[in-house]
Amino acid sequence: MGVGVSNWKLAQTVSRAGQLGVVSGTALDQVLARRLQDGDPGGDMRRGLDAFPFPAMGERIWQTYFVPGGKLEGTPYRAVPMLAKDNPRDIAELCIVANFVEVFLAREGHGNPVGINYLEKIQAAILPCIYGAMLAGVGYIIMGAGIPLKIPGVLDLFAQHQPAEYPMHVIGALEGDDTMMHFDPADFAEGALAPLTRPKFLAIVSSNTLATTMVKKANGRVNGLVIEMRTAGGHNAPPRGKLQLSEAGEPIYGERDDIDIAKLCELGVPFWLAGGYGNPEKLREALAQGAAGVQVGTAFEFASESGLREDYKQALLDKVIAGTAHVFTDPLASPTGFPFKVALLEGTCSDAEVYAARPRICNLGFLREAYRTPEGEIGYRCAAEPVSIYVSKGGHAEDAVGRKCICNGLLANVGFPQVLSGNRVEQGIVTAGDDITTIAQFLPKGQTHYSALDVIAELEKGMDLKKPAEQHNYQAVGV
Image (spheres, rainbow, N blue to C red):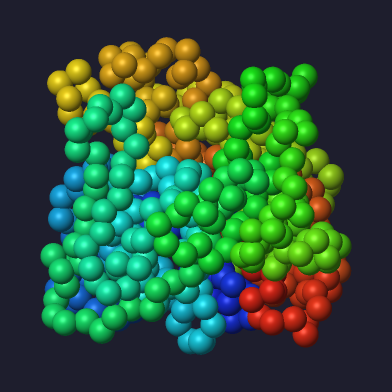
């Protein structure tokens, strides 16, 4: 569900109801910085900062970003430097604090577990982000959009406040190049700390091969798998083999892309099915096939507790009710090169004219790729930045065709649009799963909106409530 949609409020509601609420861990540094610049309405960020175990660090974040009463309307948010292999201390601190605050608030007031979802693709901040979430007592780390074989070992080390490292993927790197990222909790701690509880680790995969690889080759325990089908929202795995497009311009998937559920059962770890499983019948089917439950994203995205801004949420719900909602699997939009599902909505970046009016710029950089420069250094480029700049960094012009700035669009989705020069305001780019057309099932009679509890009540019709809690359906997110 992307940046800030599965926020602490939604995750808290889901976890309180006995399922696993999951916050999105993507771009939480930007989310916290912008919430503070908006004046911290409700005082929730201040409450989270007050609970942070390193008070001096928390106060530095507050003093840096908090704007009493909120920034003036029409003025830009203060820029947060883009992430890189070696982040300066203030950026690492922001990542630690932001992840702590989101998880702390999601866990507040109940004793049920909460998870956090990360993209392995966004590697530059993964170590401080995970450590911050663990300081808050996160119960599950969930990660996809890559092959996170080294994450289980990181969790083992961080549970003891030991230093950890993680390899950054650098295009063109040569043997002997320094591509390893390092993080030592001792560099940030303000006093002695008791050991942390090691969260369970769930890897998001989209093939039997990757599922087997994660279970057998990870450097620590993989506690389960999320099997994400191609109908899921956000980024999808590309089809295996040569890319072919339908008449509508969407990727064509074939038998090679199907998942063998029976083989998943042989791996001996719990798994949850994702993508089109947001209804009681599909949940019942998943359980019958041996799954521990299902991941549900789109249904919760349009619940009243989600962070999706209200105008987008209601406009798309109105389309669902009218039978005109549509999601397009765009093979080009994402700078990652992976197919990206876009909910078509007038006035957003799904509208070609709206996006064409936007200056081509990359100023957040979460989806940048690292590459080896001719001088042997690490550089960063994004297929959505100005084409001439992208090409000057060794990118190919054809790879920039049709690419969009997903990062700014996702922040605009949740009410934090950046203001560009000339008072141009960034517009959103809403992602959703193919089953957006079915979410009317959660609407109470005569209503045009629903809550997360309405979703859970409907889904539980497909559950055997006598099963252990870990075999229940759970809610998670993915960009």
